[in-house]
Amino acid sequence: MLELEARAEPSRLMSWASPLLAVALMLAGGVLVFSVLGKDPVEGFRVFFINPVKDLYAVSELLLKATPLMLCAIGLAIGFRANVWNIGAEGQFMLGAVAATGVALYFDGSESALLLPAMIVAGAAGGAAWAAIPALLRTRFNANEILVSLMLVYVAQLFVSWLVFGPWKDPDGFNFPQTKMFGEAALMPMVLEGTRLHLGFVIALATLVAGYAFMNRSHAGFRMRVAGEAADAARYAGFSANRMIWVGLLLGGAAAGLAGMGEVAGPMGQLTDKVASGYGFAAIIVAFVGRLNAFGILLASLLMALLYIGGEQAQQYLNLPSSISMVFQGMLLFFLLGSDVFIHYRLRLRRRAAQGR
Image (cartoon, rainbow, N blue to C red; front, side, top):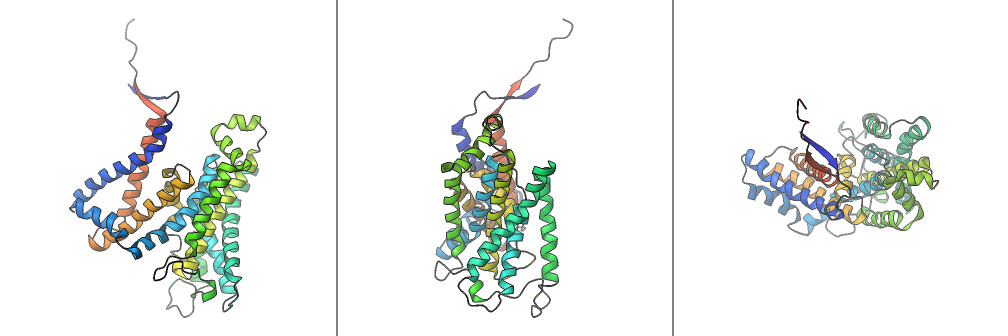
Protein backbone atom coordinates (compact mmCIF):
# COMPACT_ATOMS: atom_id res chain seq x y z
CA MET A 1 0.00 0.00 0.00
CA LEU A 2 1.08 3.58 -0.60
CA GLU A 3 1.97 5.85 2.29
CA LEU A 4 3.63 9.21 2.84
CA GLU A 5 7.06 9.19 4.44
CA ALA A 6 8.70 12.37 5.72
CA ARG A 7 11.86 13.39 3.88
CA ALA A 8 15.00 13.72 5.99
CA GLU A 9 15.68 17.18 4.55
CA PRO A 10 13.22 18.95 2.23
CA SER A 11 14.76 20.60 -0.82
CA ARG A 12 15.19 24.36 -0.35
CA LEU A 13 15.39 24.82 -4.12
CA MET A 14 12.05 23.11 -4.67
CA SER A 15 10.50 25.09 -1.80
CA TRP A 16 11.20 28.27 -3.74
CA ALA A 17 10.44 26.75 -7.15
CA SER A 18 7.09 25.21 -6.14
CA PRO A 19 5.11 28.48 -6.61
CA LEU A 20 6.35 28.60 -10.22
CA LEU A 21 5.36 24.97 -10.65
CA ALA A 22 1.93 25.72 -9.16
CA VAL A 23 1.45 28.62 -11.61
CA ALA A 24 2.45 26.40 -14.54
CA LEU A 25 0.01 23.68 -13.45
CA MET A 26 -2.70 26.32 -12.95
CA LEU A 27 -2.21 27.48 -16.55
CA ALA A 28 -2.38 23.88 -17.75
CA GLY A 29 -5.57 23.45 -15.77
CA GLY A 30 -6.85 26.66 -17.34
CA VAL A 31 -6.57 25.08 -20.80
CA LEU A 32 -8.82 22.27 -19.60
CA VAL A 33 -11.29 24.69 -17.96
CA PHE A 34 -11.64 26.84 -21.10
CA SER A 35 -12.02 23.73 -23.27
CA VAL A 36 -14.74 22.28 -21.03
CA LEU A 37 -16.59 25.60 -21.13
CA GLY A 38 -16.45 25.61 -24.94
CA LYS A 39 -14.02 28.52 -25.26
CA ASP A 40 -10.83 28.78 -27.28
CA PRO A 41 -7.99 28.48 -24.70
CA VAL A 42 -5.78 30.91 -26.65
CA GLU A 43 -8.51 33.56 -26.69
CA GLY A 44 -9.30 32.79 -23.06
CA PHE A 45 -5.71 33.35 -21.97
CA ARG A 46 -5.50 36.53 -24.04
CA VAL A 47 -8.56 37.98 -22.32
CA PHE A 48 -7.59 36.63 -18.91
CA PHE A 49 -3.88 37.46 -18.78
CA ILE A 50 -3.03 39.93 -21.58
CA ASN A 51 -5.93 42.37 -21.60
CA PRO A 52 -5.39 43.42 -17.94
CA VAL A 53 -1.89 44.73 -18.81
CA LYS A 54 -2.42 46.03 -22.34
CA ASP A 55 -1.88 49.75 -21.55
CA LEU A 56 -0.89 52.14 -18.77
CA TYR A 57 -4.40 52.53 -17.38
CA ALA A 58 -4.87 48.75 -17.29
CA VAL A 59 -1.56 48.36 -15.43
CA SER A 60 -2.62 51.04 -12.95
CA GLU A 61 -5.83 49.09 -12.28
CA LEU A 62 -3.75 45.97 -11.71
CA LEU A 63 -1.59 47.81 -9.16
CA LEU A 64 -4.72 49.24 -7.52
CA LYS A 65 -6.20 45.74 -7.13
CA ALA A 66 -2.88 44.41 -5.77
CA THR A 67 -2.62 47.11 -3.08
CA PRO A 68 -4.96 45.61 -0.43
CA LEU A 69 -3.61 42.13 -1.18
CA MET A 70 -0.04 43.28 -0.44
CA LEU A 71 -1.07 44.90 2.85
CA CYS A 72 -3.13 41.96 4.10
CA ALA A 73 -0.60 39.34 3.00
CA ILE A 74 2.47 40.94 4.60
CA GLY A 75 0.61 41.24 7.89
CA LEU A 76 -0.48 37.61 7.73
CA ALA A 77 3.04 36.45 6.81
CA ILE A 78 4.46 37.87 10.05
CA GLY A 79 2.09 35.74 12.12
CA PHE A 80 2.33 32.67 9.87
CA ARG A 81 6.10 32.58 10.35
CA ALA A 82 5.50 32.05 14.07
CA ASN A 83 2.67 29.54 13.49
CA VAL A 84 0.08 32.14 14.51
CA TRP A 85 -2.74 31.35 12.10
CA ASN A 86 -4.75 34.50 11.57
CA ILE A 87 -7.49 33.49 9.10
CA GLY A 88 -9.68 36.51 9.86
CA ALA A 89 -7.97 39.24 7.83
CA GLU A 90 -11.24 39.72 5.96
CA GLY A 91 -13.00 40.80 9.16
CA GLN A 92 -10.06 42.97 10.23
CA PHE A 93 -10.15 44.60 6.78
CA MET A 94 -13.81 45.47 7.30
CA LEU A 95 -13.29 46.86 10.81
CA GLY A 96 -10.45 49.02 9.54
CA ALA A 97 -12.78 50.36 6.87
CA VAL A 98 -15.46 50.99 9.51
CA ALA A 99 -13.08 52.85 11.83
CA ALA A 100 -11.76 55.04 9.00
CA THR A 101 -15.31 55.73 7.80
CA GLY A 102 -16.31 56.76 11.33
CA VAL A 103 -13.57 59.39 11.36
CA ALA A 104 -14.49 60.62 7.86
CA LEU A 105 -18.19 60.96 8.74
CA TYR A 106 -17.56 62.54 12.15
CA PHE A 107 -15.39 65.24 10.57
CA ASP A 108 -17.50 65.52 7.43
CA GLY A 109 -16.90 68.84 5.72
CA SER A 110 -13.48 69.33 7.31
CA GLU A 111 -10.67 70.48 5.03
CA SER A 112 -7.93 69.72 7.54
CA ALA A 113 -4.77 68.07 6.23
CA LEU A 114 -4.79 65.94 9.39
CA LEU A 115 -8.03 64.17 8.47
CA LEU A 116 -6.44 61.58 6.17
CA PRO A 117 -3.61 60.70 8.63
CA ALA A 118 -6.26 60.34 11.35
CA MET A 119 -8.18 57.92 9.12
CA ILE A 120 -5.00 55.93 8.48
CA VAL A 121 -4.37 55.60 12.22
CA ALA A 122 -8.04 54.74 12.87
CA GLY A 123 -8.03 52.08 10.14
CA ALA A 124 -4.93 50.35 11.50
CA ALA A 125 -6.27 50.60 15.07
CA GLY A 126 -9.66 49.20 14.06
CA GLY A 127 -8.11 46.16 12.39
CA ALA A 128 -5.73 45.59 15.31
CA ALA A 129 -8.58 45.86 17.83
CA TRP A 130 -10.57 43.20 15.95
CA ALA A 131 -7.49 40.95 15.83
CA ALA A 132 -7.00 41.46 19.58
CA ILE A 133 -10.14 39.41 20.28
CA PRO A 134 -8.69 36.08 19.03
CA ALA A 135 -5.33 37.03 20.60
CA LEU A 136 -6.98 37.48 24.01
CA LEU A 137 -9.03 34.31 23.73
CA ARG A 138 -5.96 32.34 22.57
CA THR A 139 -3.65 33.51 25.35
CA ARG A 140 -6.21 33.53 28.19
CA PHE A 141 -8.48 30.60 27.36
CA ASN A 142 -6.41 28.62 24.82
CA ALA A 143 -9.11 29.10 22.19
CA ASN A 144 -8.14 28.19 18.65
CA GLU A 145 -7.23 31.42 16.84
CA ILE A 146 -8.12 29.89 13.46
CA LEU A 147 -11.75 29.33 14.39
CA VAL A 148 -12.14 32.52 16.41
CA SER A 149 -10.65 34.82 13.77
CA LEU A 150 -12.66 33.10 11.02
CA MET A 151 -15.98 33.35 12.89
CA LEU A 152 -15.32 37.02 13.61
CA VAL A 153 -15.34 37.63 9.85
CA TYR A 154 -19.07 36.93 9.78
CA VAL A 155 -19.66 39.11 12.84
CA ALA A 156 -17.83 41.93 11.03
CA GLN A 157 -19.96 41.42 7.91
CA LEU A 158 -23.16 41.72 9.93
CA PHE A 159 -21.81 44.79 11.74
CA VAL A 160 -21.01 46.53 8.43
CA SER A 161 -24.46 45.61 7.08
CA TRP A 162 -26.14 47.03 10.19
CA LEU A 163 -24.23 50.31 9.80
CA VAL A 164 -24.93 50.86 6.10
CA PHE A 165 -28.56 49.74 6.35
CA GLY A 166 -29.06 51.66 9.58
CA PRO A 167 -27.36 54.62 11.32
CA TRP A 168 -24.80 55.41 8.60
CA LYS A 169 -27.10 54.96 5.61
CA ASP A 170 -26.99 57.86 3.17
CA PRO A 171 -30.45 59.50 3.19
CA ASP A 172 -29.84 60.68 -0.37
CA GLY A 173 -28.48 57.35 -1.59
CA PHE A 174 -31.67 56.06 -3.26
CA ASN A 175 -32.04 53.42 -0.53
CA PHE A 176 -28.73 51.71 -1.40
CA PRO A 177 -26.76 50.24 1.55
CA GLN A 178 -23.98 52.83 1.62
CA THR A 179 -22.77 55.87 3.49
CA LYS A 180 -22.56 59.33 1.97
CA MET A 181 -19.51 60.04 -0.17
CA PHE A 182 -16.42 61.24 1.68
CA GLY A 183 -15.22 64.81 1.37
CA GLU A 184 -12.15 65.68 -0.67
CA ALA A 185 -9.89 65.84 2.40
CA ALA A 186 -10.84 62.25 3.34
CA LEU A 187 -9.81 60.74 0.00
CA MET A 188 -6.43 59.32 -0.96
CA PRO A 189 -4.53 61.55 -3.40
CA MET A 190 -3.77 60.05 -6.81
CA VAL A 191 -0.16 59.14 -7.61
CA LEU A 192 -0.62 58.69 -11.37
CA GLU A 193 -2.50 61.31 -13.35
CA GLY A 194 -5.49 60.03 -15.31
CA THR A 195 -5.79 56.80 -13.32
CA ARG A 196 -7.32 55.64 -10.02
CA LEU A 197 -3.99 54.57 -8.53
CA HIS A 198 -3.71 56.36 -5.19
CA LEU A 199 -1.34 56.89 -2.28
CA GLY A 200 -2.36 53.54 -0.80
CA PHE A 201 -0.10 51.78 -3.31
CA VAL A 202 2.90 53.72 -2.01
CA ILE A 203 1.86 52.89 1.57
CA ALA A 204 1.60 49.21 0.62
CA LEU A 205 5.13 49.23 -0.83
CA ALA A 206 6.45 50.96 2.30
CA THR A 207 4.66 48.36 4.44
CA LEU A 208 6.32 45.56 2.47
CA VAL A 209 9.72 47.10 3.14
CA ALA A 210 8.87 47.53 6.83
CA GLY A 211 7.61 43.94 7.00
CA TYR A 212 10.84 42.67 5.43
CA ALA A 213 12.91 44.68 7.92
CA PHE A 214 10.85 43.40 10.83
CA MET A 215 11.00 39.74 9.80
CA ASN A 216 14.65 39.65 8.70
CA ARG A 217 16.46 42.49 10.44
CA SER A 218 14.90 42.78 13.91
CA HIS A 219 15.29 40.76 17.10
CA ALA A 220 11.50 40.49 17.45
CA GLY A 221 11.24 39.07 13.93
CA PHE A 222 14.04 36.62 14.71
CA ARG A 223 12.16 35.39 17.78
CA MET A 224 9.03 34.84 15.73
CA ARG A 225 10.94 33.02 13.02
CA VAL A 226 12.59 30.72 15.58
CA ALA A 227 9.21 30.03 17.20
CA GLY A 228 7.82 28.91 13.85
CA GLU A 229 10.80 26.80 12.79
CA ALA A 230 11.79 25.29 16.18
CA ALA A 231 9.18 25.77 18.89
CA ASP A 232 11.15 23.72 21.45
CA ALA A 233 14.26 25.84 20.90
CA ALA A 234 12.19 29.01 21.30
CA ARG A 235 10.77 27.81 24.62
CA TYR A 236 14.26 26.78 25.80
CA ALA A 237 15.56 30.26 24.94
CA GLY A 238 12.79 31.82 27.02
CA PHE A 239 10.82 33.40 24.16
CA SER A 240 7.27 34.22 25.26
CA ALA A 241 4.71 32.33 23.16
CA ASN A 242 1.92 34.64 24.31
CA ARG A 243 3.85 37.73 23.26
CA MET A 244 4.40 36.29 19.79
CA ILE A 245 0.69 35.50 19.47
CA TRP A 246 -0.18 39.10 20.34
CA VAL A 247 2.45 40.55 17.98
CA GLY A 248 1.47 38.26 15.09
CA LEU A 249 -2.25 38.95 15.39
CA LEU A 250 -2.03 42.67 16.12
CA LEU A 251 0.37 43.38 13.24
CA GLY A 252 -1.73 41.28 10.88
CA GLY A 253 -4.89 43.05 12.00
CA ALA A 254 -3.31 46.50 11.68
CA ALA A 255 -2.11 45.78 8.13
CA ALA A 256 -5.54 44.44 7.11
CA GLY A 257 -7.25 47.43 8.73
CA LEU A 258 -4.94 49.75 6.82
CA ALA A 259 -5.96 47.97 3.61
CA GLY A 260 -9.63 48.49 4.51
CA MET A 261 -9.00 52.17 5.12
CA GLY A 262 -7.34 52.47 1.70
CA GLU A 263 -10.31 50.82 0.03
CA VAL A 264 -12.95 53.20 1.42
CA ALA A 265 -10.74 56.29 1.07
CA GLY A 266 -9.59 55.24 -2.38
CA PRO A 267 -11.63 53.80 -5.25
CA MET A 268 -14.89 53.49 -3.29
CA GLY A 269 -14.98 56.86 -1.54
CA GLN A 270 -17.59 55.53 0.88
CA LEU A 271 -18.47 52.47 2.96
CA THR A 272 -20.81 49.86 1.43
CA ASP A 273 -21.81 46.33 2.39
CA LYS A 274 -19.52 45.03 -0.41
CA VAL A 275 -16.38 46.62 1.00
CA ALA A 276 -14.22 43.51 1.52
CA SER A 277 -14.63 41.59 -1.79
CA GLY A 278 -12.68 38.60 -0.45
CA TYR A 279 -9.31 40.36 -0.20
CA GLY A 280 -8.61 38.98 3.28
CA PHE A 281 -9.09 35.37 2.19
CA ALA A 282 -7.22 35.83 -1.10
CA ALA A 283 -4.31 37.31 0.88
CA ILE A 284 -3.84 33.92 2.57
CA ILE A 285 -3.10 32.40 -0.84
CA VAL A 286 -0.85 35.38 -1.65
CA ALA A 287 1.16 34.89 1.56
CA PHE A 288 1.78 31.21 0.83
CA VAL A 289 2.49 31.66 -2.88
CA GLY A 290 4.94 34.41 -1.90
CA ARG A 291 6.60 32.03 0.57
CA LEU A 292 6.00 34.47 3.46
CA ASN A 293 8.66 36.69 1.90
CA ALA A 294 8.10 40.39 1.18
CA PHE A 295 9.38 40.28 -2.41
CA GLY A 296 7.50 37.04 -3.07
CA ILE A 297 4.33 38.62 -1.69
CA LEU A 298 4.75 41.56 -4.08
CA LEU A 299 4.88 39.21 -7.08
CA ALA A 300 2.09 36.98 -5.75
CA SER A 301 -0.13 40.04 -5.16
CA LEU A 302 0.30 41.08 -8.79
CA LEU A 303 -0.57 37.55 -9.91
CA MET A 304 -3.68 37.41 -7.71
CA ALA A 305 -4.76 40.87 -8.90
CA LEU A 306 -4.33 39.61 -12.47
CA LEU A 307 -6.66 36.69 -11.69
CA TYR A 308 -9.26 39.06 -10.23
CA ILE A 309 -9.22 41.45 -13.19
CA GLY A 310 -8.87 38.63 -15.70
CA GLY A 311 -12.01 37.04 -14.26
CA GLU A 312 -13.90 40.30 -14.74
CA GLN A 313 -12.63 40.56 -18.32
CA ALA A 314 -13.60 36.93 -19.06
CA GLN A 315 -17.07 37.57 -17.67
CA GLN A 316 -17.47 40.62 -19.89
CA TYR A 317 -15.91 39.43 -23.16
CA LEU A 318 -16.28 35.64 -23.03
CA ASN A 319 -19.59 35.44 -21.19
CA LEU A 320 -18.05 33.22 -18.51
CA PRO A 321 -19.44 33.02 -14.96
CA SER A 322 -18.11 35.49 -12.38
CA SER A 323 -16.69 32.59 -10.36
CA ILE A 324 -14.05 31.85 -13.02
CA SER A 325 -11.40 33.84 -11.15
CA MET A 326 -12.10 31.80 -8.00
CA VAL A 327 -11.60 28.62 -10.05
CA PHE A 328 -8.11 29.82 -11.01
CA GLN A 329 -7.38 30.88 -7.42
CA GLY A 330 -8.49 27.46 -6.19
CA MET A 331 -6.31 25.66 -8.73
CA LEU A 332 -3.33 27.80 -7.73
CA LEU A 333 -3.76 26.98 -4.04
CA PHE A 334 -4.42 23.29 -4.73
CA PHE A 335 -1.29 22.84 -6.84
CA LEU A 336 0.82 24.84 -4.40
CA LEU A 337 -0.27 22.75 -1.42
CA GLY A 338 0.15 19.56 -3.46
CA SER A 339 3.69 20.59 -4.37
CA ASP A 340 4.46 21.32 -0.73
CA VAL A 341 3.28 17.86 0.30
CA PHE A 342 5.76 16.19 -2.05
CA ILE A 343 8.53 18.57 -1.02
CA HIS A 344 8.23 17.42 2.59
CA TYR A 345 7.09 13.84 1.99
CA ARG A 346 7.71 11.03 -0.49
CA LEU A 347 5.38 8.27 -1.57
CA ARG A 348 6.55 4.84 -0.49
CA LEU A 349 5.12 1.47 -1.42
CA ARG A 350 4.92 -0.64 1.71
CA ARG A 351 4.49 -4.34 1.06
CA ARG A 352 2.28 -6.26 3.41
CA ALA A 353 3.96 -8.98 5.39
CA ALA A 354 3.67 -12.32 3.73
CA GLN A 355 0.81 -14.42 5.09
CA GLY A 356 1.36 -17.74 6.81
CA ARG A 357 4.95 -17.26 7.88
